[in-house]
Amino acid sequence: IPWVAHDVSRDKGFDMMFGLIHGFRMQLFFFIAGFFAHLVWEKQGTRGFLGQRGQRIGVPFLLGLVTVIPLCLAIFYWAETYTGMKPDIPRPPNPTLLMYPTMHLWFLEVLLVLYGGAMTIAFFRQYPIWVNLAARLDTAFDWLVRQPLKPLLLVPPAVLCLWGGPVFGEVDQAGTRLLPAARAVAYYALFFSVGWWLHRRVHRLDELRRWVKSYLLMALVAFFTWGACLSANTRPDDPDFLRIKLIALCAAALYAWSMTFAMTGLFLRFAAGHRPRMRYLADASYWCYLWHLPLILWLQVLVANLPVNGWLKFAFILGVTIAVLLPTYHWFARYTWIGRILNGPRERPPRSLGARQSVVLK
Image (cartoon, rainbow, N blue to C red):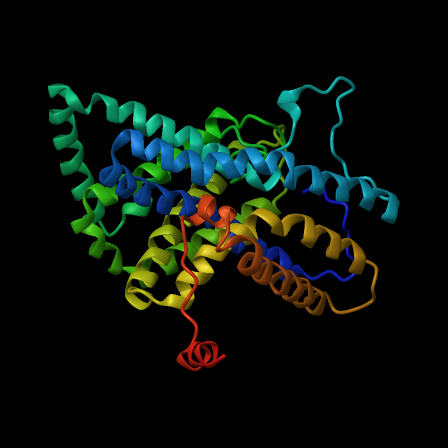
């Protein structure tokens, strides 16, 4: 990854942690996004869905392009001066608007494309041919969800999308340009579609509580297989390149699907039900994600050359970032117009009885 912060304190454990998280987190996100997108569409209809998603996703994306992204770019260029290092980022002599980076906001744009595609398909539900096709798809989906080896069954279409990616298991150089690659949209559409259809067949949700241990084991085997293929460092002119590439992409796809189902099953088992604190953090996570990158990048550059254990730096950066972003969410976003855009209206909790009595006495 081209980056300006090259820390002197390095550890292979960071590579392992990055791979474990990066290999499934966005796939799981789009799976969940598809599930709740169908819920919103079912409740509000097409017009209400487009309006609500335009507010929650479209507005933050557009505002982020003119606020968060310029701040990130400014810190990037400051870091080049501060560190004297320039990351290996291709800079064309004649840049165009299509080369404007979306950085970590790329997923919002992909979501908007998927929402548009879902609503286009939903338009045809009024025709009899769709009723017959939907019934067949329902039957096929019910069969798929019941299968213990459903992650394996979903590997082939994922591999087709991953085949043209820049790195084994990576579908696109996300965030480096304004428009995402078609294969990236298709790849995340797979997870989005399964989530969408799962809510359509929501009575099958409990099926994901089963086989969690098996999926975790499957994911572990797939992860180390994928890592071994990456470690081979093969090139296109090597005789075993295509074989290793196929194994790597199958392993990456299997890891993503296995972890998606395993994590969903784990949370259905152990984190079901309403928890006010968790709901608060879930609301805050959107704000934190939008604004975390410039703060983290700045902190990374500041500590990069300090001769301190890397894990201590990691904990420091996370701690400072959370200590800044959670209070700013509470003070500047949650109960303001910003919070209404991101999460909908939120009411301030009533003050304690003692505080109310004090006000009355005064």
